[in-house]
Amino acid sequence: MDGQQNEEHATGDGESPAAGRRRRWTARRGEPRSGWFRALRLAGVMLAVAAVTVTGVVLGVLGGGRVDTDIGPFQATLTLTPTTDGGTTVDVPPLGALLLNSHDGPTRLTVRLGALDQGRTEALIDDPASIQRASQSAVEDVRSGVMRLGLRTVGAAVLATLLLAALVFRDVRRTAWAGGLSLLVTVGSLGAAAASVRPQAIEEPRYEGLLVNAPAIVGDARRIANDYTRYAEQLQRLVGNVSQLYTTVSALPVLEPAPDTTRVLHVSDMHLNPTGWQLIRTVVEQFDIDVVIDTGDITDWGSEPEASFVGSIGLLRKPYVFIRGNHDSNRTAAAVARQPNAIVLDNTTTTVAGLTIAGIGDPRFTPDKNTSPAGSGLTKQVAEQVIGVGEQLASTVRSSPRPVNIALVHDPASAGPLSGTCPLVLAGHTHARQVSKLPQQPGQMPTQLMVEGSTGGAGLRGLEGEKPTPLSMSVLYFDNKDKLLQAYDDITVGGTGQAQVSLERHVIQDPKAGDPVPVTPTPTR
Image (cartoon, rainbow, N blue to C red; front, side):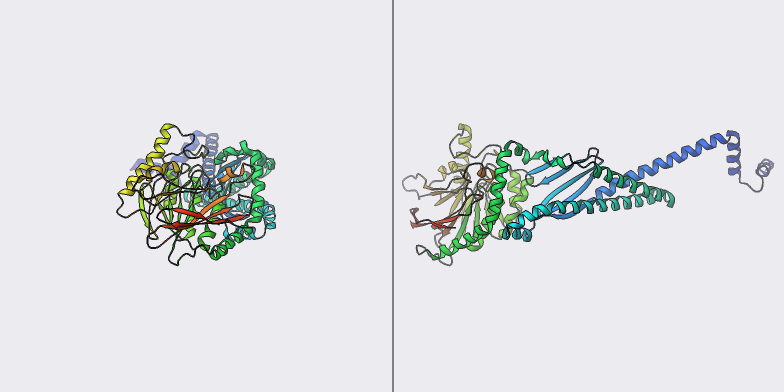
């Protein structure tokens, strides 16, 4: 007890024992040591503030560095992400991306072009001059979007840093330091990027995804761009021509379909051409189509980005029966199957609009090869695969509890084994329209093979020749009683850049024999 009293007395004026010990320790160590300790402690605080600031800025940029804006007819998303080498990425689904060495600094700008706005797109189509205005205003759209993105990013980074610092330090002064430092870092980073902008970088892009072929065909690309410009200027005429087709069809005396006639639209080989959807929608509406049948190659490479292309299926609001082509992957088929009105057949059957339809996908996946006519250039192994799927489908058709009215294959080379199993086989693949009868054995029912041209004009490949590949589709009329083909209309739209539309009607004199009678083509301009 005496020792404690002496120690308390030694501290003087009621000083606590702990405070006395700190004072005596400081006295023994001396003032220089105390200054070093304060400097070390200050450095630790500064490092902590810096760490919190960097973390807050990164979280703020990742969470808030994003704006949605309109760039011409596109709905685009601009985002900023922390990086070490700067630059700009332009995502163009489903084609891929362009990488531009546009600036330095610790920020990367990503421009993702989304869906086309229907209203603005139709306005461009109705007024060709507006296409030029839209291209000029796109630069201002991007500039405005980037400015808003910068302001939003600064605000998000500072706010995130303040919140994080408040949680970590629980000190107003240190929180203010972190907030000020985050403002300095963010503005400095964006300023460094702005100061190092290189406008000429857009002339030297690096390609990724499906766009990697662009540099190899730059000459063709320029011609394609010119063709598309002319095509955009004439799109409104195209729609009007299709309307004229409907009027022409109604006036033809050779066939007056009964009100209960089932009308099927056969399309094939879209190859990513968005123009095909415009034509399909018009024909579906004008011809009062009951079901759309697609015999494959809706995409070009079957990649994940291309899956967005099939979203237009849902807009048709009609049953859409699909089989894979050799350019379609399982991802493509899955994307089609996700559409609310789509049915994907793979050695299976379905009954739609009173018609029983069987179909099987192409056994190949060859997106890197040009489409070749059926049966030509095929190795023995590939030919066996192609014919084999026809044999598989023939077995499925024979075992179907309901008689199959239509069988679907992608390559007409698969159709041979289906002879005698059903009245009609539909195919595509060759990009050339053809109608023929399959060889039949005595006692077998006649089977007619109808090969559709390319509804997408063979995609970009259709623009490489002197004359673009025309867009083709057919309207098939089935009687409601026997579900046999009564007549069909072959619709042909002049290739991309042309506006001529023609229709050729064929009437089946004896549906059980499957012999068509051609009618004089009816062109419209």
